[in-house]
Length: 102
Image (tube, rainbow, N blue to C red; front, side):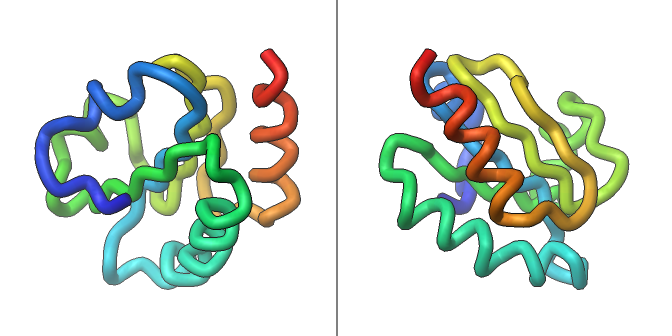
């Protein structure tokens, strides 16, 4: 789900959420896109939110995003895992599996 309005805090409040902070001009971000899509289709209980830092610089600042892509995995609004740069699909799946049963 591409963040279109200022509903971000409501969207992350409950459940498992993978947040992809990216920019349209970022090469590694473009490389992450197919992986993000696979995660979104494979794990229906995980909400995926893509945040374009050029459009939502307030959120980028709030979450201390200095480099992109930055992926944050949240549970009930709290960051549990964070990675800067390209992230392998296996790593994202490990994050999900670690927190699904909690």
